[in-house]
Length: 189
Image (cartoon, rainbow, N blue to C red; front, side):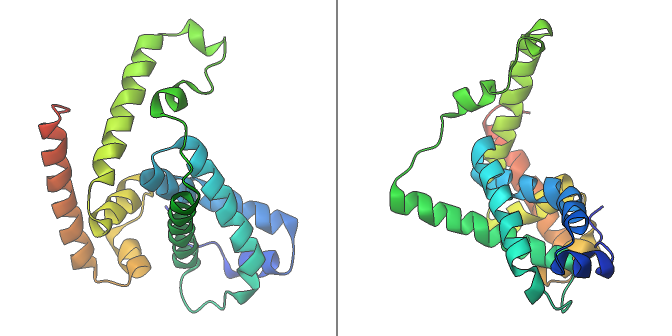
């Protein structure tokens, strides 16, 4: 799913072409957001980090020399931006909105006409799943996110992380087993 964009799009963005920049955002926005959300577990924080990632991409795209896949570069920037966010939060002692408030954001009058109970249950299930994913080791968490939320293949993840495809498969198997254990202990399954 996240094969790289053609090199000419990346070069065009580096030259300042706004439509090429928009193409990069459209192509990678979901990928970046999912990585950020899986680490932060907060919609607004993940959106802030996603915006910061794209600012960094466009600020430093001229330094991308095609020595690795562009998706690897985007992933590295995202991962580092999430780490910066955590350091900043610790340094400033900031606290995000509580999850109950965040779950209710964006519910306009038109949305309230549907089955609110089902939406609340679904949001809670997602929140519990993301919390459980957050308890995994970094290696396990990143393969779960890249495979299931990023739609990447074993080979793409292996290239991105600089490991063998067999290592990705093994980590994913262990991550799923650990995730199942966590969710079972919480009576989620």
